Length: 453
Ligand code: ARG
Image (cartoon, helix red, strand yellow):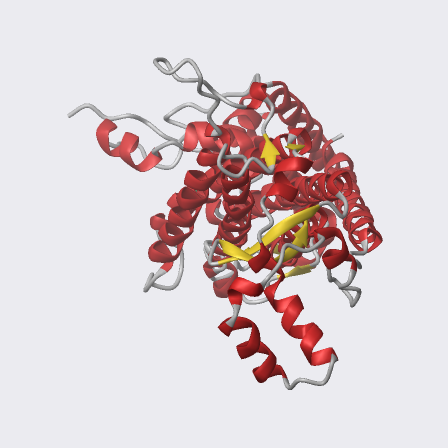
């Protein structure tokens, strides 16, 4: 029987190796820098342990960190690769360190497991990615807000059940979506908070007979706190991926609604908005076509991310406690969802920025019925009880007249109504969110730099 040699296993059937390794040699490339960072923190902590005979001296730890810095740099440049017999990034880094530093390289894994490592790598990677996703979310909200500013109080037919309902404005439509997008930061930050916990030092999930200092690695890596229970730390793998996937799925659902409205309102039959031709694609047979394929794909990607989230929860469902290899498959789920969502945030911001507003078509869409509720409320102002006023209008819909939509939207002045949308509120939330992202990203980069240079 043909077998392949790995660091951990002497003899593994090549088909079994390929099946179990899966896409890790590719996926793990995104974790390489974070893996180096995690190892730098672990080795630093090992060198600080109070032992009669140190496992790694402080000097040796510095040498390891220096080499890890080199590996991280090559990974950032794209010069780092993972071999199938490495299995994953963790073994590839250990192999490189051992090739370079000999016996010292063989010591770095003392008192930890690969499960420990992958859990740390994934969390650092998620923190970085979630912060970038947060700032892209803010950027999309800002584009929607600015579309609202472009449209201003231009009347737009507000709809329920897709039927004409009440006078609205382009500003209300666009900033309403902006607010929904901004609110998604709550979920992204919840996912961030769960990612910001240090599992390192759980080893195989049950601790080790060494005086390891888990708080120290938490501090070095810049995590908010340590996951206290080692068994719990091992089980937290998959849970923070699921939280991230849930945030991505909900965010994508919000984006799909923006996309759907844009598709509908830019249809020739509506014509409220126009998508720039360079953001549309043509047909191979129908020369007149400019299709909103981008926005249709936003809808389909939202469905895919929901599928990825479902897959993650199905994978976790009834999984036995402790590490199970199933968890490896959480990795591509969350990575795929992140890349789809971030790409979608960016492309949608671009489409929103380019969307043109057709004032004539927006105004032309008004029909007398859109003013029906306003008419009934005028009767109320004259003393008619609401339900009577409602019936009065409903029984004589033919008497409704076309009214001035500008006056109708100007008449609604309470908080958040058509005449009182406060752009400053959104601008302030955007600024605060970006400030918080910059602060956290700065701290993460500082921790990385301190460990790897
Ligand atoms: N690539 C593996 C994963 O993502 C690393 C951990 C492997 N651990 C193990 N006990 N086989 O899960």
